[in-house]
Length: 356
Ligand SMILES: *Cc1c(COP(=O)(O)O)cnc(C)c1O
Image 1 (cartoon, rainbow, N blue to C red):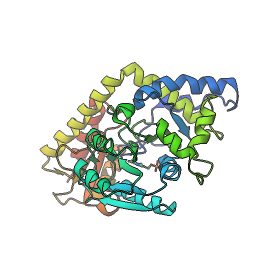
Image 2: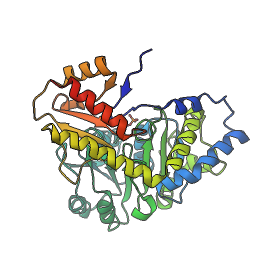
Image 3: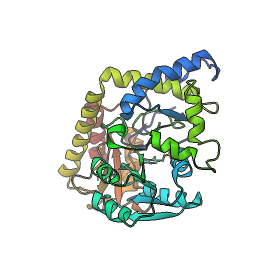
Image 4: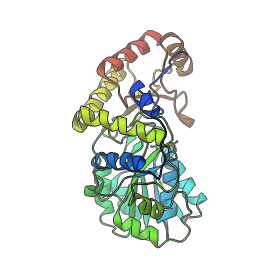
């Protein structure tokens, strides 16, 4: 089978080492071997989350926990920060959960700014706020520490943060910033196959969850906490993916967390340099651009779809041709996962070779 290498912003290329880890013989999920596996990854996950709280593993994609956070924490009204496809969808999901929800919407490609959050929360009535740190659909990176500072002015509002495409590519200090739920998924920045979501919940958010009636079962935070005490998950987890995660944590801590962050920043800069040198523009404003992917404006009016087709046929690489309504108007290049300056240079050369 030919190997098409993905440079789309998720799922991304998975290493052979990771796939091999998934082939570890199966174990029971209530036995000592599983508890050992679960316990083994906790300290490193806590380090990456910047928290003293336990890190829960959900056998679902990120959306399971994104929906779960709403069901576990919103009683009065949720404010959804919206600046792209995923964050817009979270508003829709909140309403589908039967919650009172309000939109804090900016145009796709623009960022959520701290003063907007302050102005909206000052109107009162909210008890939860959702933010996507790195809006993957349009390459916007929202100013998380500055927004977190605003949230600390509103102690009744729980702060729910999706860092699906930024987790482990830069430092996100959950406890220090006062984040109440920090969640991510396996198939983006962690370079694992899809199917696992990871999240941590603050103590006060856990108290709120305990006071809510209709949390359901599968994403009930209280169930996760109860099982966590025994190094277990509420239902049968994707054990193979947890072996893959353990292997990936070995990779991350062998490289060093700081070195990993620097590598992602450097690779991102390498893509940015190419973008500017070719006369393309960025979709997001300076200072608000993602470090793990690049969303490029099609200001040169090229035929993106046929370019991507040539790239795939000739070089077996795939980049993304624009998300949803941005199809054809933007393209996106991921620098997440295990990429190196050599592998990014190879991709950029292939982009040049196929760009007409
Ligand atoms: C991909 C993505 C999601 C959704 O993840 P699923 O794995 O499809 O549930 C949510 N948020 C962000 C920022 C993403 O990039």
